[in-house]
Length: 192
Ligand code: GLN
Image 1 (tube, rainbow, N blue to C red):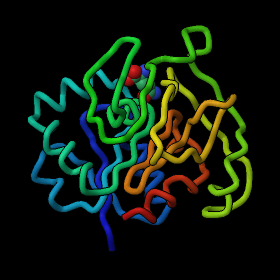
Image 2 (cartoon, protein in one colour):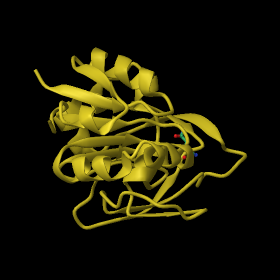
Image 3 (cartoon, protein in one colour):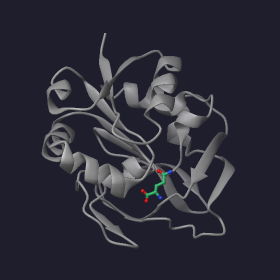
């Protein structure tokens, strides 16, 4: 059985572990580089991307995680998606450059800080998982402002991509770990 690691420096990593369990996978918390050698894929949770970056530097984990992400599947949600991006702005910030996407932090603005939306996923997503609408929880979410030619959009919200993938990676600007719908975590498990 494949093992999924969840980066456990900061943020809602415990909710991801519960979601992975609902999707049928075992997971372990990752806090150092050695642990990366024992996992098949990594989830980078939501939280605060600036804090996560500081902790990644402090733990000497930034380069090992970037190297891992070049070779293995990684799923980033919200702050995790910000870390995976090529360019981050508003304000600009260092990122892994692993996915060919540019993101604007807190792109929905202060008034619309957090919300729950019912979304109609792209047909391809529904065919590969299961049909039906998707409940998406946005919390100070980033907006994906640019996607590369190799990046595929699986779910949109008001026209903006909110769930995107490339061959090995998946990024959500919302929090699929906070709802009972396991389709997105299952889709990630298929990349392992
Ligand atoms: N606004 C946060 C950031 O910029 C992300 C919020 C989240 O992960 N829910 O890192």
